[in-house]
Amino acid sequence: MHAIIKAQSLLWLLYTTTATAQYVLDSLSFGHQSTLSPNGRALPGWHLSGENHQIQLLSDRVILTPPYPGNARGAIWSDNAVSSKEWTADIEFRASGQDQGTGNLNIWFTKDKNIGTSSVYNVEHFDGLALVLDQYGGTGGKLRGFLNDGSQNYKAHNTLESLAFGHCDFSYRNLGRTSKIRITNHNGLGVSVDDKECFRSDRISLPERYYFGITGATSENPDSFEVNKFVVSTPVPSASQHLNDPQAKSGMPPTLEKLDRFPGSVQALPDRVAEEIKSQSDQFADLHNRLQGLTHQIANMFGEFDALSRKIEEKHSQVLSALPAPGAASPQQGGATAADYNDLKRKMEGIERTVQQIQRDVEGKDYKQHLNDLQMAVDGIKGGLTEHLPDTLSRMIHASSPKMGMFIFVVLAFQVMLAGAYIVYKRRRNGMPKKYL
Image 1 (spheres, one colour):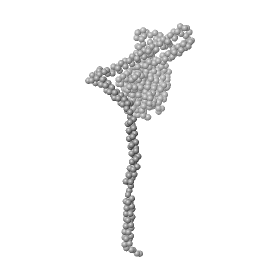
Image 2 (tube, rainbow, N blue to C red; image 1 turned 180 degrees about the vertical axis):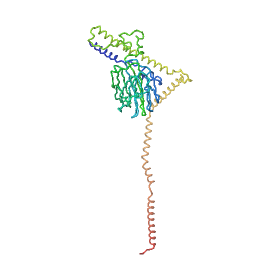
Image 3 (cartoon, rainbow, N blue to C red; image 1 turned 135 degrees about the vertical axis):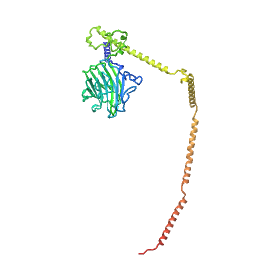
């Protein structure tokens, strides 16, 4: 009984996993693999265009609008249309600029790609969906959704904000990290920002065979918009993914026991109440199909691991083949010959012998006598200073002190000069004529 309960729990986990599985459409996605571009000049499956600047394509991001100069525009449009009715688009981007920077980021899903680098503020007629991210209303950031069937001229409309069918506040500028937007076209249209629902409508269903596009625009105070990832996934594989199914390769028509979401696996049976399965044969069939699906998924995992192991071995072989072999290149070609390697080996051996000799000298010799001689020399210097320093200082003080006789001579001479000056003064005073009133 416990084994049956554990098996049912395992099968329920398998079912929930397969029910939410998504297949990435590589032709409409970028940023989900190692690098965006294989050559750094083009983005596979997308067309890039810019005004007043050239779009920068780095290894991990696409810079739609630069931080300088202003009044710049950038756009990327997918070359292929979405061929599925249900899909999910995940966008990761970053916006940075001045405190009062202005700009807008537009995410399009339209019937035609003639919008170019336009934003929702200056586009005329379009057929599809437009999500606009800007500083509208002074709220610090807002995401709004617009729909058009081609009849509305957005550029000539006086109250553009009245055409928005959904909106939410979204602070996205100068966060120091990437922000996320998810668009889901499944049982209605839903939009979420940073894993929080922004708005949703069950009455909107976008058609297939439309194109994705992302445009950015800035004014005098520019904003830098960088798109790091744009991934489109569907609950069913595309035609190219379906070709990997062994049954599809053999040309056999798919049976009801085959799941179209996972090539080579049985169909993921819908959830059923236990009371509905009454006979033992039905129980066995249900358990058999689910366990078989689990077995096929495990086999697929081992297949992926095997393919990954082969790729690692191939890469290892490439690295080894790129290393120069001894004697493989001639000196004229700038390569290392066997003589060069032998010469390097001899030099290394010589260095090793020298180090060993130094080690033996340090460990074998007794430096006690040298240390005693050094101690005696220090003591001699200390004793000499202690013995001769007082006499030397006394001689220096006596030599520098003034003579007492000279001091007495200077005092007497000064007094004689004062007495002579007084006598001269008295004589002149007595010799002056007397005045009587």
